[in-house]
Length: 89
Image 1 (spheres, one colour):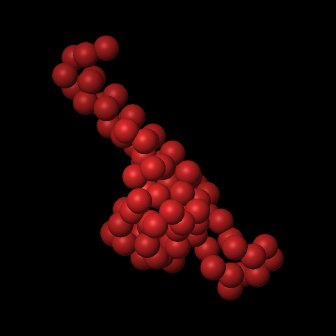
Image 2: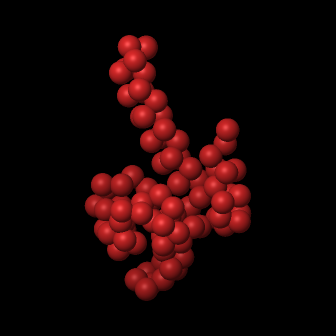
């Protein structure tokens, strides 16, 4: 299964997904401001894209492939943990 293709369907093929939508769908425990702060501090490993360089008020979002990579990495970590708990590998 290709996570990027699923995200394209979910977000109507948008290349950059607004932070508000990413928070709503994947980080509901964080506000967009909290998410941006944690991502900027390196606590969440997802780069934030500013639509216009140098403009602090410019729209910010997450590139679809970056979100797909993050989801896939989280799945891989969960699978590894599950395998260890089950005594596999």
